[in-house]
Amino acid sequence: MKNISKYLILLVGFVIPSCVQNNITEDKYTIDKSLQNKLNVLIDECITFNETVGVSAGILKDNETIWLGAAGYLNREDSIVANPNMLNRTASIAKPMTAVAIMQLYEEGKIKLNDSIGKYLSYFSNEKGSKITIEHLLTHTSGIGAYQSREEAFPTTDYPSFQDAIKIFKDRPLEFEPGSDYRYTTYGYVILGAIIEAVSNQSFKAYMKEHIWEKAGMLNTNIEMFGTKYENKSALYYKNREGGFEPDIQTNLSVKVPGGGFYSTAEDLLKFGRAILNNELISAETLALMIIDPKIKKRGNNGYAMGWFLYGDKESPYGKVIGHSGSQSGASTQLMIYLDKNVVVTALGNTSECWNEIYSLTDKLAKNTLDTEILKTPLYNVIPVTEKQIQDYSGHYQANNGRVRRVFSFENELYIILNNNSRYKIYAATNDKFFIRLGDITLEFPKSKKSNEFDLIIIDNGEKYLYERKKSMANSLKKRIKENGIDSTLTWYASIENTNAFIFDNNEINSLGYEFLQRNKTKIAIEIFKINTKAFPESWNVYDSLGEAYMTDKQNNLALENYKKSLALNPNNSYAIEALKKLR
Image (cartoon, rainbow, N blue to C red):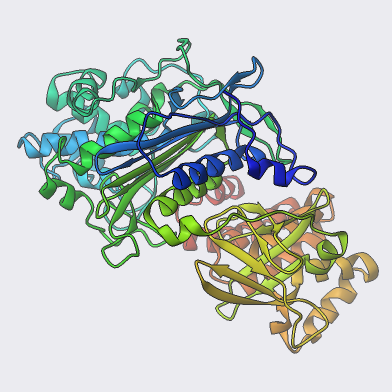
């Protein structure tokens, strides 16, 4: 059935969906009507706000599925609407399933977590195989790197076995000593798949089917086989930089099966979550062991344990929360298991480059289910952002801790870049209150007390963060070079007494240098890169860029000096390694 919600009517004229909204929900579940209506609107918003081509989602509470929904298109070209039971790639949600399979073998005494991988795989009988343990693979602390090219990230080659897939990266040097750092990589989970086969004497597919999927009642989950047509399976899409949708690459997932090669449904993922909650696959003690935070992952907001992201602990508002995200060609996915609330929430989008939006949907579905106050909170209306607001608010902002936020215009819309380098469209709820489609984040632009400019206040879950408007050093350099030339600009730069009035953004200044380098203005590029090395002496990348500019200018001694500095800061900088080979 087609259902144009009341919320969509409020948006007419301001938000133009890329396709007709098709909200389809199952009516067979017992659920409070106000909650059901809110959930329906939330999934509709993914389409009305042009975030994905199609999406399915579901919620399980107290062992019962209470809601399933879908919106958008399963196949836009053929006008096939999305439905709650459509098959979708799970992407990296495969990882916790593989991790649970490993822990089953651990429970049976067939493996130990501190066993080296060389014990089970003869082709890892070298020093690397003796250093890396099963636990290192589970926690992404093995030192094995991630994809090194677009061809690896978006593969079309078929790999008949895990050993064939492992040949891609087996002989590459480790990025760090196993157990000393964190590096998210699907390749480590391919090795875990090979270990499951070696220990169980079953194919990976047979093991997963018998010990994970059938045990959990997941009858619509399996390994995606390249070239096979599946009934009710979503087409693959991606969101381009302009915000439009295009068919995505039909990638071959055989290189990453245990870490990202499954298809499933929203309801099947709820069943997986239920099996975890009810200890049907592994014991409560083993799960507790799995979700101990090794405290090695330093970047990002969430820890990572054995196959699980850690989204909340016992002190969090909703207690302990585990789950996993996923992103690959034609898929953006999220699974959340609220261990202390007996709730599972999942969302599967058929569009890549929109994981933030799918995560936000999952988060909102969960919070409205768990929190009656949030359920009562009305959704935002939307009014147009004016041209004057776009002009007044575009600029750079900096908090006391040095964190920078950039607000900018693109095609007469207002956007903000956050710390994950993702851009989010800014919507106006009123003339002075704005929001983005990420969690519960609202924005205000109060008049600055120090200038005629505007500052930025970001309100995230009730916490206010002030960012003061400042000038961008990269933009100031670019403007002065254009108007006065490089020599005058360098004199001006040397005379600046209060550099705190400017925002120094490593990436922005670097990009400016490359802008001149690509225009064959090498001398100017060198001076810009030199400014960056003085501003960021601990950044390996700035020395690499300066080395490249000197090399282009045939100043090989200086190029050699800077590439060495870059390599000293990052011994795994492959660009510096290759450049030094040429220079020597």
